[in-house]
Image (cartoon, rainbow over all chains, first blue to last red; front, side, top):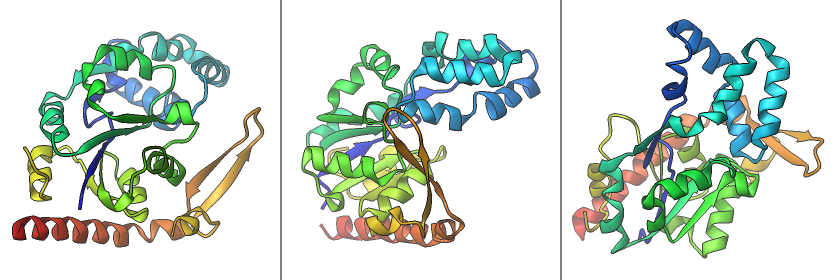
Length: 201
Length: 56
């Protein structure tokens, strides 16, 4: 029986996309793609999610790619412009869900930038607990961060539904015994939750 | 199962020399072969939840 719902944030409840900053920096689409695929890559960003400081991340990347020194610096100088805002149709489900379930967050997010988003969006106040990868120096899909969530809040994986837009992260949760929902772009979260028997929607 | 995932059979550990040492894991080819199995388990589980809710 599901008693707890565990949310990923980026791509599930909050729209976040580096392109929102760099589409105005690079006039050429190919150069924008090159920058985000080869310079400020998702892997590089994930190291900050796992606890590396922003200053160290920028410094080391600028040393490797001096040609992009200015653009690399923009990544965090303009970080709030990467936030597209709450994904309203999913955020609207939080209050009804809260009436029947305990709600938790399990997010890969830098410890330095998460407080900014937390202050911007009241939706984070709906959660009983939030585990932030950057604060724990562990990131999904490392199973230790899922275990940390379970232990910290006294949860059983078999009583949790974990929602994430990254299949890699839901696979890790499945292996640990969570119920999971991989939120792909063509999926309506409300309908998927209803299919799984989630009450109160 | 958790220990298995953490084991060398599933992931290659890389130890970084930092003030707070950390280990990162990359998926092995062996683990990648499990992806369709895990996906099938996810589909099965969602059907089980759906059936249970229909019977409730």
